[in-house]
Image (cartoon, rainbow, N blue to C red; front, side, top):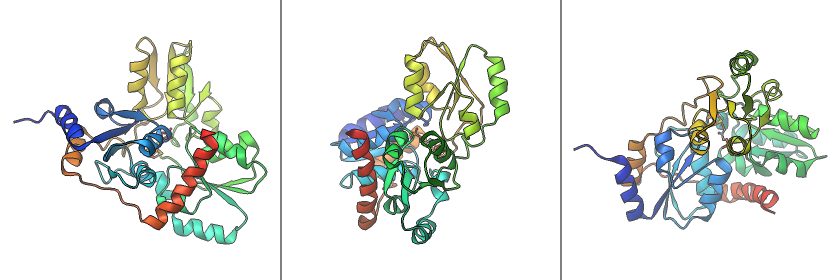
Length: 303
Ligand code: 13P
Ligand code: SF4
């Protein structure tokens, strides 16, 4: 007999006091079974506060790991254990420690797309939603931004920071080209171009609006404009179309699809929850240090 995954997921959620968190870049059908849908910042807040016993994190490894850091007593499951973020692997704790030994006076600002071990060596975390607010607290200090060069360069230019940037990047956003933007603008002259800051600065400068995943969703919801060229991962368009059924959204290029985010399907969510498998663990001494960097971020953004 064929399993109705949506029904079974809902039944298991109640039986096990579990919640499902899904990032906006997940497949539409996975987004639709989530209790909470959000960007990395919103989901980390939910993970920190939930009363659930189990968190099923439909996203990539660093997001589930962040949930575990914030909620150590919960069981955190990542439905597909191979779902990672290539950018998060572009800085290692060994390389970061070496940099810190050579530059002891530099404060390390760490994008949340990073491993727990790297967060543990950093002074503060940021997400794309709060990076501007957090870095503005560090103006005038010597800084290193890891691992995303594009967001780092964007912040450095905006706040005139004394900041080195690591050479990491998101292989999806970093590949967007000027020609793609020009071509799409020609095809849709009435549309506004909106973009995630993980794209290169020359692309960000062509945009009518730059923002995090959630920032882009809020922008299109409030804007009077009726058409948008979307310069971020295609999963967000599902929510844009739900929130704004009368507006038109054009994905800048079909390449804006994150392989790792799309690995998770409904069957994976069902199987992980049923068997309580792919449990995320973070060693306690690392967790406590990484938590300090995350709490510093919340201190600057929540007050
Ligand atoms: P958000 O912080 O906007 O959710 O972005 C996470 C991410 O991985 C973007 O590529
Ligand atoms: Fe990582 Fe880019 Fe995928 Fe975001 S879209 S999870 S930064 S690879």
